[in-house]
Image (cartoon, rainbow, N blue to C red; front, side, top):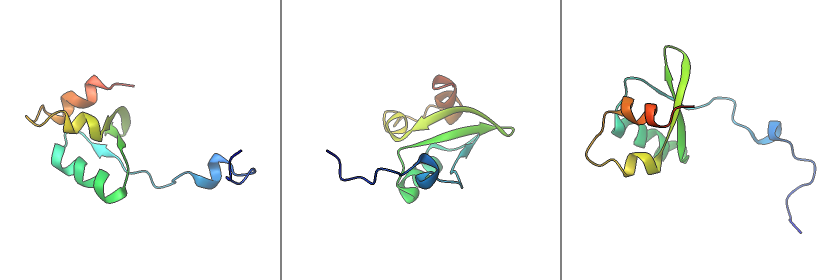
Length: 77
């Protein structure tokens, strides 16, 4: 049995100010956001519309620097 409170809702724990990355964007910039916010993934936005999600794993698998735009497209929603 879990020790977690029984009546906690998603609304109680969700983040209202969502960190996101805009295209075009840089790999190192996104890694810094993930590190500073202690998160593992981030929505990617182009012209105000979410176009994908990029994760720390995606970025770390990409040490050669595939353009960030390419990473976002490969994880398209």
